Each structure stands twice: as C-alpha cells, then as structure tokens.
Picture 1 (tube, helix red, strand yellow):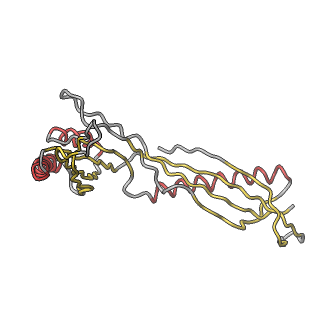
Picture 2: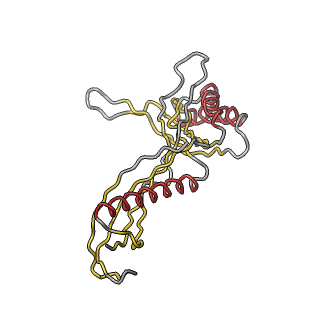
Picture 3: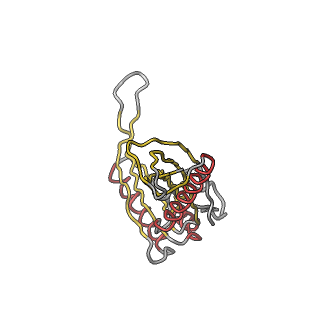
Length: 236
C-alpha cells in the first residue's frame, strides 16, 4: 500500500549567468521547487528489547539468579524463532542498592541489582506477541521496546524518491505555465530527508498484567520520506 503526502515550496530564482536556448534567445531565470515524497509498506522485520532484573543481598546471588532466569528466557524464545532470526545481548549491569539514612548519615548498601537485556530480531510478524509472552512466562520482567522495519529499505526509499520527483516536476510545470515560461532542462537536483525508513516504535511497560490472554501486537506500516529540490532551466 502506498500512502503519499506532499509539501511544496516554490520560488522563482535569478542566476548569475545566461543560458542560451534553441529559440535564439537567452534567459537567466529558473524555477526552484522543493517537494516531499512518502511511501509506506507493511513491515517485514521486528525488533524486541527485553530482559530480566533481579535483586539479592549479594552481587553473586543476584547474578546467579539473573543467569538462571535469562537462560530460561532465551531457551523459551529460541524454541519458536525461525531461521534467520537474531538474539544478541544488548546490556548487562550490576549495581548496588542503597538505603539512605533519614538523619543524614552515609547511605549503606542493602543489596545488589542485576539487569540483563537482549535484542531479538525476527522476520515473522505473527510471532512477535508469542515471543513476548514466552519471555515473560519464563521470567522476563522488562520489555524496553518494540519496533518494526523492513529488511531492505532500498525499494521503499526509491518509491519515495520517485513520488517526490513527480511532484516537483508537476509543480514546476504548473508554475511555468502560470508565468508564461517553458521548462527547458534541469540545472540542479538536491535530495535529502530523514533516515531511509522511519520505523514504527512502541515502548512497552514491564510485563503482562495478568491472565493468560495473548499479547496483541499491531505492526501497522513503516514509512520512508524523501525531499527533493530541483532547479529547472526556463525560457519564454
């Protein structure tokens, strides 16, 4: 599905040198048009960041508990991941937990907290909710984020570029006719815009509130946006 939006900024520019045209005259004017093209598509890639946080009186105990739970989480997740998926440790942290003295004394360590997060990337959208549920069921208590994208952003960006170029040309031709000018060529093309694909991102709270209902996930669409600025040569 293609969804396009357009923003155009048009100006009549004067350039420093004359351009000779086939009709025997010369003109130093040109039309400069900026147009934005957009293209959207259903995602074929999902990224999930989740993990487990544990607390214990000692760092060793917190780390051992965390390791056991993370092993169970990874085993549950990998049992359903299709070929081509990726699981990568994204962060590991051990930090002391302090209690602060209400009377102004020095804080004292009351325990330790260990956090281990993994990044999971898969290409089967129907499994996203199941992966999250399995991880939570195995002990995950943090789901830090979920985003959707496309494996190959090139074709989507190309559609956005084509859309922007068509809109720039159409706007320039409309302006030229209105001013009694004829477009004779293209002087300069500039292209820019945000990253090739803007993924749909969703931040998720700790865990499923309760019950056995499956986590519903709507992947929506991802979008590519490109702006082109074209300077056209003109003559009367």
